[in-house]
Structures are given as structure tokens and as C-alpha cells.
View 1: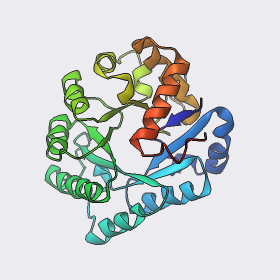
View 2: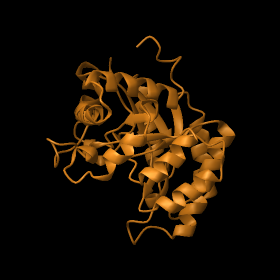
View 3: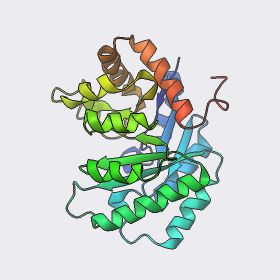
Length: 261
């Protein structure tokens, strides 16, 4: 069974020197599918172009909270237009980021987040949520929309927050940091998360798992995340790869399109 990297940024400048070679090599390395989320209008256009070029790449489009300053109605219109592309499977990466002081004001981040949530609901698309140091507000906002669905990317909230999301059908993304020695909360979150609500991600080029921490990340390192998650859940790595593959297909509505893989 191939592995599904449900969140990787191959449009990042970190891949400028070898982007096509890396992406072309993924299927032979056992990586069957990748979802690449945009972070603003230019990167959303770029990820759609990558999805057009590589059969195993799908795109999400959206405006990231770190990149939302100055976004306009035209930007939202462009995101809406890009959503019509056959290989766009979600709106993301969207959400709240309170970590960087220079980020746009929290109230504006929330406005941008809500506007994209409402677009996702209108278009019946899942969302990919970025939540950094904004757990309370992120949870409050998504709970305002009972029909909303999607994934909390690189989930870093509490087991209690996880339980609230899981009750409502959300998926949780697990990334390289679960392999780090200081990953104390992650095992607690994994313990309350059913196998059918887990997806695995690289967030490439960031958050490279042990034993490659410090190097540029890419989807070929994802088995190390699957191995750690499998250890915590009492299944084999192969079973975890299979489970998260099927979960990714279900999350992004790809079960019919990818059923022959």
C-alpha cells in the first residue's frame, strides 16, 4: 500500500533547485499521493500548476493567517475560481496563528478564516486548519459551523480539544514532531484519536522527523511518522500506512478517483 502525505508544501522556495526531480521520484519511493496546500494567491496558483503536472499531486487553495495582511475581495474571488479546478480537493491552509507578533491582528485573521470557512461550506469542500498558539479561538470558530469538515493540520492542542473535534467528525494530522523526544502531548492526543480519524503529513520542507531532523523534509520521510504512530496505537507500520491512506482518500473525497491505486 502506498503512503499518503496529506500536507506538503512543494511550492516552497526550498524546492526551487530540484522540485520536479523530487516530485517525480515520489511514486517509486512508495508515496502514492500528496496534497499541497497554498498559503496565498500566488502559492495557490502554484500548487494547482503542480497538481496539473503530476498525477499523484492534489492541491488545496487558501490564504494562510501569516499571509492574510492586505488580502482583498479580488483575492477571495481568485481562491473561489481556483476551487473549481478538478484537482483542488480542499480550502487551505487557513486558520489562526498567534505565535508571531508581526502577524496580522487577531480580529482580521478571524475574519479571513471565517470567510474561507463559509466558502468551503458553500462549495462543499473540506478545510485544512492551521492552528498555532490559537487553540481556544480556533475551536470556538469551527464549532460555530456544525456542517464544517476537514483536518486540523499538525494538531498541537490538548486531548480534550481533540475529543471535541473528533466528536464532530474532524480528522487530526500527525507530523514529524511526534518523533521528537519532547513530544509529550502527542501520545495523549493519539490515545484519544480513533484510527479512522488519523492522517499523516510531512509539512515539507518543515518539521523533518527523527532521525533526519535538521534536514529539508519531503514525503519520503513520512514512514517515520507512520512508524511512531503505529507504535502508540498498537498496529504495524504497514497497517498504519494503509489506514491513513484510506482516511486521506475519505477526507479529500478521493475514494472513487483513486480506487485503482
